[in-house]
Length: 115
Image 1 (cartoon, rainbow, N blue to C red):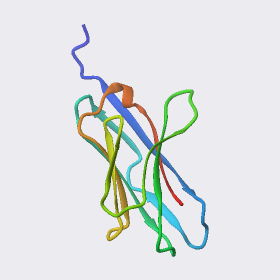
Image 2 (tube, one colour; image 1 turned 135 degrees about the vertical axis):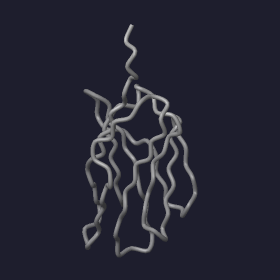
Image 3 (cartoon, rainbow, N blue to C red; image 1 turned 90 degrees about the horizontal axis):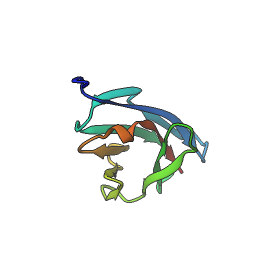
Image 4 (cartoon, helix red, strand yellow; image 1 turned 45 degrees about the vertical axis):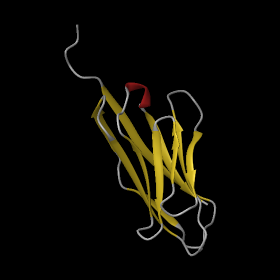
């Protein structure tokens, strides 16, 4: 019996931009390794010249194509899906993805994007 805790690896990558007039995104985490049941929070910050913004979190599991996990275009409105929740904070220009208790099945690549 393995007495070591299972770990989840979350690799945050990619900055996808549809607009290019000086827009940018920065993901503050790289490889994140944590034990099961631990909380996880991933953050993207963005710069844009547009007043209206929509941000997205995508997830890509091993040997699968990326798929949309969550999106938000309303300041501080929390959206939820599959135990994850995300909130867009326009005042700090950040978009956070959180899950209170990570599972081994959450091991994947997580991408944020702005439109």
